[in-house]
Image 1 (cartoon, rainbow, N blue to C red):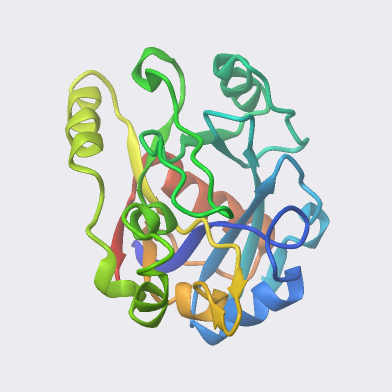
Image 2 (image 1 turned 30 degrees about the vertical axis):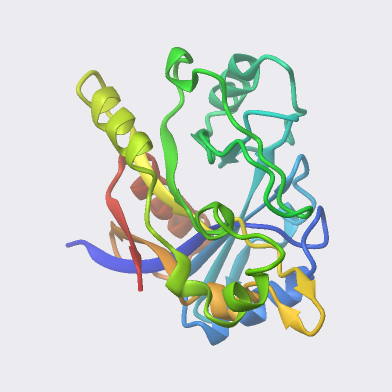
Length: 244
């Protein structure tokens, strides 16, 4: 029997360019009522040894491989993978480690705010053996039309300015899925940045917005088994995402 669990993916902490510590992120996940969360700091697995159950919250740690372009979420890996100018090389390394990965924000090319530069992919469908795509990126959806004149309004009413996954990306996803299974997920890309006196998508607030739901066997509190169940559900696409 499958059970539904709710979590968030693509979170940054002070281990890279996020503003929240590991402990603060975990506390926010608990407040938001999450079942799982996956931290993916840039080019490190600094919190890997802290993976585990924190009360009713399962915390997992992956990596966002982060060259100047073509970022890639690497999950269920054992060693951090350095960025490279050749995306296929780190896609292959994730697979060698028996992990799996997702192409992130592939079409975002404009730098709207200093703290959120673009990292587009060039012709990402030409690459092979990636397992999925971050179809809806919360931060890149929110930032795509913002400027310094409209920023205060965007900060006061952030959800009003979300428009959903890019239609171009949805069409490309459909095309790819006609040939092979490509899993789609939602990613927050949350950093907990602050522009005084505003917090740009605080962790607790963001964890209650765009979330990934999975179906898997009942999580029992056995960390190794539960980690495998969550990752299997994500890798196989037994999931959906929603603006909750």
